[in-house]
Image (cartoon, rainbow over all chains, first blue to last red; front, side, top):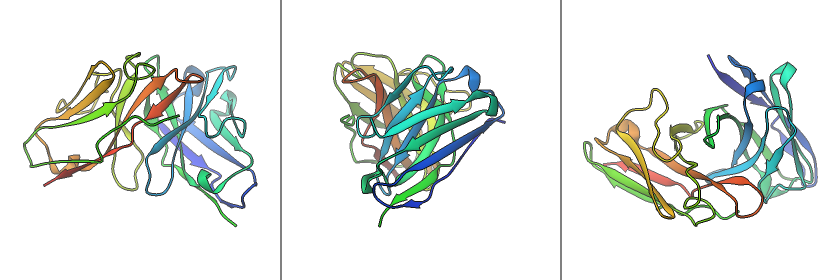
Amino acid sequence: EVQLVESGGALVQPGGSLRLSCVASGFSITNYWMTWVRQAPGKGLEWVANIRQDGGETHFGDSVKDRFIVSRDNAKNSLYLQMYSLRAEDTAVYYCARDVKAVGANDYWGPGTLVTVSS
Amino acid sequence: QSALTQPASVSGSPGQSITISCTGTSNDVGGYNFVSWYQQHPGKAPKLMIYAVNNRPSGVSNRFSGSKSGNAASLTISGLQAEDEADYYCSSYTSRSTPQYVFGTGTKVTVL
């Protein structure tokens, strides 16, 4: 069974840093682009970033560009999101998701992890 | 990146059909066939319902269908059922700035 489980969400002060992890099971992430999506409380979905199978290509949403880094460890079947210079508006549930090959969609999602940025 | 435009809410009675629109530009919806739709129940992760404009993943009911015309995409739910009550989001690839994806503003579907 394909599963994704995020972890690392926490309460962090403005300006702080945090690293999220996503562990996959039931498939090998080696074969897939992977994506992070977030959702602020009571708000809609926001695309955050994605990363190519070998980690050699990444893309970011405008609101997180230059502050977030996405990486992966295929040997550990894991995806990461390193977040810097956190702001109150980064408060959200962060989901990792698997990309459907070549069609720009995400077929499996984790349950999400909550990041709260507040003093 | 600017979100795609969806109606805030759509409602219908059981058995009826409803359609949710998703309006973008030639840089996203109109320029690529990478439009997908997601269903999200409260407190749950999104679920993929339609990909590449009009394709259903395995296991998704054929009551859900997608289409696109110009810069707008649509999701139609036919034979509306109580369990269809949820939030729905469209998504598209966009070349507006750096290559990335953008979601719609979301539509709350209510089954009357």
